[in-house]
Image (cartoon, rainbow, N blue to C red; front, side, top):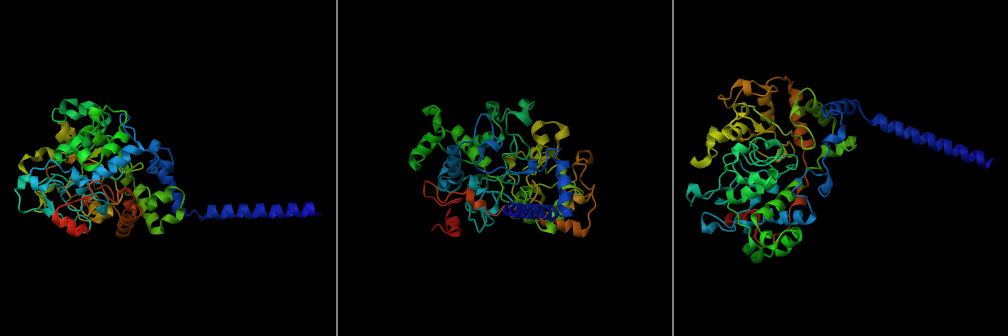
Length: 448
């Protein structure tokens, strides 16, 4: 009798468990099922995992340059160097030494985007709350200011690219195979590294940084370099090249993997509201966003023309004469000299756009909604772009007002990782203020 009672109890428990499973399956709504089907289609059969970002310390799962494997020691060093304002050691104006860093244009406060339309390194003044109040120092000659002729992109999810910059000119492999004829001004490409590593090398010169053996000893970085590059000859260990490799390794770990969209992809169906799910369905389907914004970083490795404007479209940016601006405006074509590439720019990630404030390679939009409405229209900001170059998705979709708002809501909220402070050091070895150390920034940042 006791055995029968026990069997009866077990059967009841099994039925209860099965009901719980059935209830869980029912909890997957019609919206979830529709979205899952679209993601399966867009992943070319790879499934939802195709869109999931790895953990930042799961180095084996993060895309990396075979010539620069990610290590904990490189990441630790790169994390400090990106924010170290003492690295600003090669200024045009001596008084500006030690007042800027890579993070001047990539502060975490604005999700590693520039806090203003045009990034400013040397000769910038102030920071504000998120880099929005960094202005030109009016007391210096204009040609002494480190001004970029194009919008500074975020560092988030840069692991998912093998070339760097909007035109993809940096990188000596993969996407840039066959472009060797254009490398005369980029000899670093001949080293065979991917874009992030090359960017780390070229960027030190472009942005007037100086990290060498004197820097290492002056600010206490020798031990960190020794740990990160123990297999590198001592006479090469404290150099522009090793600095670049450390920065690239760190940058590859900057992943927006705590955004609600990532939680949803991992099976938490409550991570998104119904409105966000409707927006995601539009994003993956009718709105055609995933034609380009795909994969874990929601960006392909391609270049597309949408006729966006440039920095010369308004008075809110300054382009110096030596910027080669005609080539800048031609995007990929300005680098390859192939007319078929003219006016095409690299697909950006869509994560944390809410903090970007300016959108497009020229920063000519002030909201995500503006960009969406522009892509839905047949209007071109740069009317010199031939229609034959324009992406087929431009003006090819009609959305209702409700659909537009749902799509915006998804991009602004579901793709937003609010915990990026985990990637930033509490201090740098010099003890300097960061990401800027000019007098006004020190006040803005509470360093004084």
